Length: 70
Image 1 (cartoon, rainbow, N blue to C red):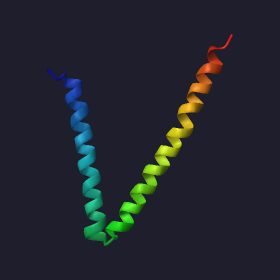
Image 2: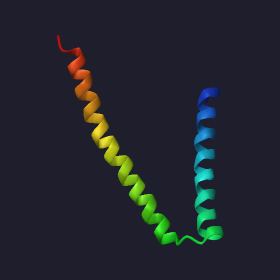
Image 3: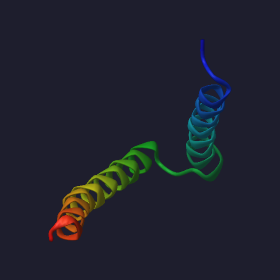
Image 4: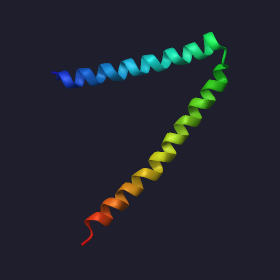
């Protein structure tokens, strides 16, 4: 059985994805942004997030290791 907390988290995630899709649709249809250009910007954003994670994860492990050293 799914707990209330999991249902809320799933509902929040689904609503977030739907809101993002609505914004993309609005940018393409209403504003007139090229869909190709929009996908290029999304890909660039994904690469930026990946780069930040690539830097943050080893830094976090290093800081944790330094904190545990005697």
